Length: 233
Image (cartoon, rainbow, N blue to C red; front, side, top):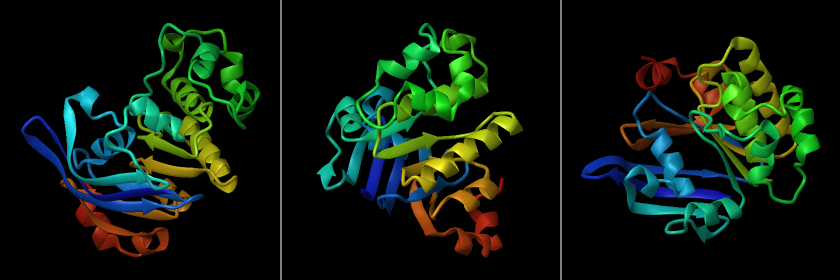
């Protein structure tokens, strides 16, 4: 479904990505792992066509989705191919209500308002509240619900549970497990290694702008020296 080959990218004169390569098949959950500043978010921005808005550019390599080359498509055209993003920092619309956030970018398909509210009942309770008046956990639920309302074939989450309370994190992991069981393809960034080892099919480790390892959860769990070298601070 998604193919990233020898991706290179830069912000101004500063090269950030040098050689990132991985694939994601239909129905798979794949994570991008690595310490802060190694290029994970830049990789997501490159996939979604968001680098130009951040002052960046792709300098090499290729990205394709079901055989369609993503660069140089604009971000809205990439989204319409079936890629839904839950961005780092949530980025909900602060002056729209929960319900307005959910329907603002909705597209026809399985996911409707009722479906989003069933997935996150708290959003139904808060549907008339403005985005800026939600807690961090509620905003993350809203960001996930908003992305699902685009009815994506591939759901991408950048820092899925960062900064959230333990109960909220557990709820989001349960939701992602449910989505996986229903066949949703997911590309995920998160620092909670124990959670992603249970959820994901495969992991890609990025170190200083290069993909340096790829393997299953079982392989990563059995390699403490790998986790120490690339993932621990």
